Length: 240
Image (cartoon, rainbow, N blue to C red; front, top):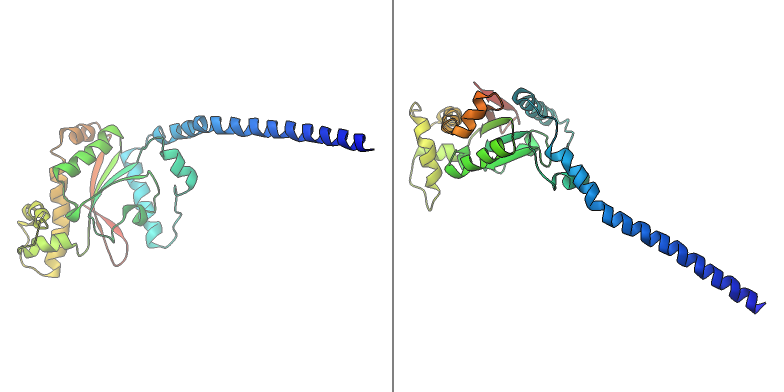
């Protein structure tokens, strides 16, 4: 009886060992196959269907409408999306916006990871560094829409309108905004609102001096638009 029990025990152990070996092999197979699956997923991220500039702009504006109406979809914010774009990026839009903590393109346009190439700097100014970042997004990543986004009650624009001494290097962005204010008179809130719009237009003019951006504009692979974000309503309005 003991021999029989021992025999069964040995068979059970061998059986368990076989199952374990199969499981281990399967696990190892999964581990070694993960990079291939991740790589395959990444291909869809870096080579999606090419969007036209108008289609890309429409996607931004529709996302903003969802934000304004509190009907957010929170697209491309899953762990799967994070892993997908880890292999490469292909943002459908580039946004030059203010560094203001209340102006977050992914949120106000209801987009997700890898959708928008953000260039954020106080006063949404086209400094050489900002321009280089934008050229990278447009030329190398082939982003079809470039938006310069100003916003209501912008502190940087307000500082430029007031044009008073500022500590440290804070005044550097004021110098980049001042040329846009030639037609602005006074220091009222209305003057600031007008200056926000004029600054967007001026920064677009600076961007259009880039040969790389100009070439893509002429080939209709890129559109540059100006817009204003309303802090009170959340609405983004195009500047014509």
